[in-house]
Image (cartoon, rainbow, N blue to C red; front, side, top):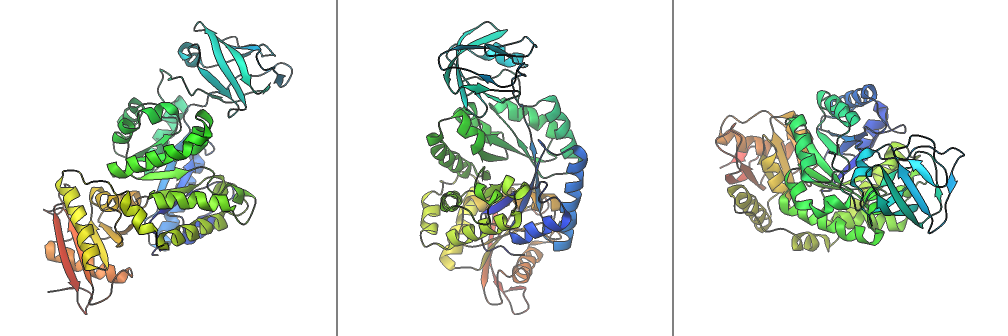
Length: 478
């Protein structure tokens, strides 16, 4: 099933889309990767969903990526004695380590790491920012605050800390158990929530040991400040705009989205734009015009993937939401302005052989107007370097390793096919020609470009480029 777009679609599974038939319908509508949200999925349900996705994959015959999204630390206040507490602007309100139920003057905060880390002047945002508190005094066991905005607080509301870096890591005990479970289930990607610093990624990488690729969700100001370091230790990045918009002024989020997208493009790491992209389609069959523009901006910017959350997980129109996102992406990539915008943001190649070959492949492909760029990739590196160039020519990524093809289903422009490894260079070129024809990317008489790393079957840098002609038999013609 060939997509008529380069950007990928990531769809979240949930109550509205968990059955095998629904997963197949979402894939046919345009979903390339499926997200399992471990905030809501038990280990048993996660394993069932993985099994259903793999059965759909086998039936369709295309590699499908699976992303497990780890919850991360959920910071919440305790309970209140007499229901919601009504506060007044300017009054003092304390968060402390006393487990008794709260009232209009104080509440229990069952997170000693917050009480120890918050400093005078730091902001505490409660209930997605509906209540804004500012610390005026702290001693390690309590944080006394002044109410700046908002007047209501109730049981178990979330706490956001835009100014505070917690000394504890991003992985809770639940996260560690979930991480072990999803790695055993052989998912392709793991998204890590509330990353604050590169050390958080290093900790997760030690646990993963290469069994899945790691995606850092950027949703805290501290992560934005150390973005380049986090990108270096991550395999991909998600612009998680929901919590980012709580902890930062909303008007700053679009600029940060562009900054993250361009930084990932420079690094050659996939970047996903997420949260509220077609939010109104949770309950409506069509999106708002503003939502269409929002998706379009991410596509114009060259994001690798755009994501649906509640729209596909719990909405009334999950298949329509995926289909709508697919149509938006296809239309944007047909726009006459699209190639110029993508080219203007293209990063300079790094001083490596792999980047030089990938750059040359794009330039030659566009100059010679070849049908397709075919890249052989065992580890995925060659495919990602080709995608980094954002060529106008389609990219066909061939791999003998199913896991690699599934992982690359998230990357911009890569149509992944699992195939037997080539025996030698001539067999490699013949396979490239034959599969290009079979997949609908070329016909006899057209040219294609093949890139790979040689010697074959030895993971390493991309160092080979060849122009091939497709003969009447669908194989390489001399």
